[in-house]
Each structure stands twice: as C-alpha cells, then as structure tokens.
Image 1 (cartoon, helix red, strand yellow):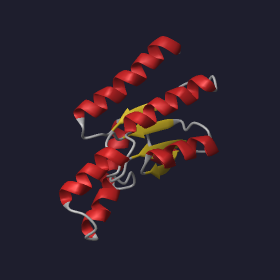
Image 2 (cartoon, one colour):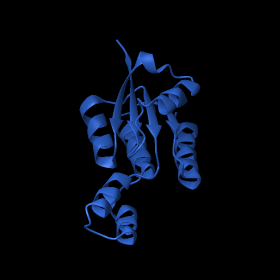
Image 3 (tube, rainbow, N blue to C red):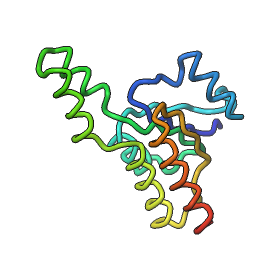
Length: 139
C-alpha cells in the first residue's frame, strides 16, 4: 500500500515533471506515494477530516490565485480588484498549517513529514517556524 502525500497549492501541479522532481529532491520518491492535490484551505481541511493525516504534506503559502485569475479573465473585475480579493477572501497555507497543528493536538497525533514549495519567502518561513515550534514543544 502506498503512502499518502497531500499537496496544497493553488497553481503548481505535483505531477508536472518540475514539481515531481522537486518532491524527489526532498527525499520523497513520488512513485511510493498516492499524491492528492488540493488547491485551497477548505479542500485541505476536508481531506484530512475525511481521510486522516497523510504521511507527507507539501505546503504553498499563497492560495487563491486561481479564483483571482478566473474573476479577472472573465471580465468580472479589474486586476487590482482580483489581487485584493485574493488577499482578503482566501485562507493561506499558513492558516492550513495552524489548523493541522490544532488537529494533531486535538487528536493526539504526530505531525506528518512536511515540506514547503512556496515562492513567498516570508510565508514559507512562517510555516516552517510554526511547524518547528510545534515539534519542539509538543512532540
């Protein structure tokens, strides 16, 4: 039975060669995992509630780009409005990280292995620091 990898990212497809290779460079053999791609906070939390913790989670920080692009390209809003929508109405990968830590604490579970593929260096550092702090304090 394959292990599970939960890929949280609104844009990057984990089965594309560049990201599949990125996963492999983290020391995770993609062929040993069933990879599930979720694109937003709600799908991330729903997947874990329905399936349990995966063996590995890969986090993006900035989520919601797909919603903003859709609204902009369909002519429903300007580029500036779409950017504001993305910032105001979407939960980030950091929010998903905090939720997962609380889920682990509430259910007395160990944190899964994790990696961060975010292009946002500040957001990536926030996720990393939060997870490292949890591991140091509780596990």
